[in-house]
Length: 281
Image (spheres, rainbow, N blue to C red):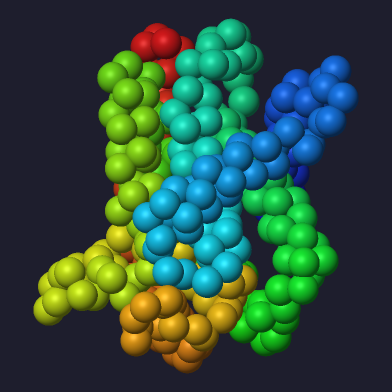
């Protein structure tokens, strides 16, 4: 009896979660001529701008800089988009939260699920473009590293989303703080520069850099997708810090442990504060 009730509740949560994600997708692209293709506009514009700034003007020296950039940018956009959307998900559904009893945990999860769908479609599109332009370095078993990297990013995104969604209901400055932190996070992670430059600058303190779970996620995505073990132009340094799977899996394991701790914290805070959502909105 108890088992049947638990299964029914889980089925209800999944149906509600998938329904919210479908509704968000329909609302976002309803009436649009290009539909989902608009979701590619932002990364494509950034690709052009950053390729010009870092590839032409500042001469980063990273061969095929556009593909290197996209390998880290798409997973960062997934994380930042999930957190930004989740931050206002409870307040944005105030009418629903105040009038209809339902599992409130689906609101931050729907934000992450919505952005995960975009990530999968954008990665698929990028692979097609890379193959069509003759860039085949990513073809190989190393591509499997995408899965643990996305998994760690997903756990971290869900944990942070729970945390900011709950805090934003009571502390309205949370939205502004999140925007600033995400802007800083883009530059802290090695998306437009090579990780080897971090080692040069931090020296013996470089290990601290890996406390940030997204750092290991970004470099793993670059190993899986960019995958070219080539030197930086004008330097003896390589673009990738290592070609060995073990290096990336070890750092992902650390990132996974920290992400799991953040998930536990975020979920606990969300569950504790959700009882007062209807009053505090």
